[in-house]
Amino acid sequence: MKRIGVLTSGGDCPGLNAVLRGVVRAATNLNWEVIGFHDGFEGLLPEGGDFVPLTNARTAGIMQLGGTILGTTSKGHFITKVGDGSNRTHVPPAVIEKTKRTLADLRIEALICIGGDGSLTTAQQLHEAGIPVIGVPKTIDNDLEATAMTFGFDSAVACVADALDRLHTTASSHKRIMVIEVMGRHAGWIALYGGLAGGADIILIPEIPFEHERVAEAVRKRDAEGCLSTLIVVAEGAGEKGGREHFRATATEGEYQLGGIGNIVSNEVARRTGKDTRTCVLGHLQRGGDPTTLDRILGTRFGVRAVELIAEGKFGDMVSYQNYEVSSVPIAAAVHRIKLVSPDSQMVQTCRAVGISFGD
Ligand code: F6P
Image (cartoon, rainbow, N blue to C red; front, side, top):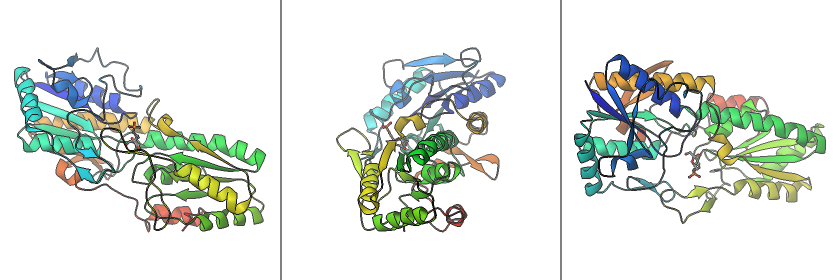
């Protein structure tokens, strides 16, 4: 009987449990055992490992639950992305040796690492050190290269659209400008898709630097048309032309925390238009809660495919969603840079065609 390991690493997102259930079901069909490590890669470090055996019974009924039954962390000994995200570090050799020992002691023949850009960079380093790993791309940000979509993204977009629906009614009652700051780190995917789905009037994303005066102009134009309330979606990584990203906290371990641009936009719009503005920072609501049906399906397909990749011996590969099929690519192809919104993409053009301003 083969024994494999699985872990969830980095920021959590809806759909992680669907992947775990998919892995366990597919592995059980092959008569393999599955060991789930707690709190990401950290579970590999305590003497004997910190883990739980995962069975069909243990994973029954979890597909529709948000979060991860294994726990996760974006801190610890395996961090490879630090600061503003442009710096990469290396997992210390002693930590890699300890990882190898745990896997050997537990007779684990392959390790499925479910994570985003940073966690998959770690997975790639473990692969280069000779550990048989398979990657599964996870992040609400949808910023991973070499896959058309990550699971978790659709759930985050649904959360933004729901929030916009709610803000719409109060904005229109008070004839106000509502600014909603959403996640996405250095990429504007959540703002772009969530904004379009929720009927935003202005969307500000990192890939299209904006000018406060252009944003104010768009508000005035709407007023002149008789639309007295305006919904502005601002990605946390958005910035003014010639400006920079705004960080809420820089002192934590790992990557800096982005945030604050929502209030800046809100104040500038108020100052330039004389209109009443309010800011809503959606925050971790976008990461919590149940996965959408799409993320349940994508997560399950990713989990099943990860097990197939082990059976095929495709170590160092990551499952990848392309043209409605789940195939695989080298992890290295997914982590060499982040996937950004192209300013001249069809999606951006569609937004412009329905009158959405990007403040440029
Ligand atoms: O990468 C996912 C993400 O939710 C980003 O969109 C956000 O900037 C960050 O993680 C928040 O991380 P934390 O949970 O550490 O606050």
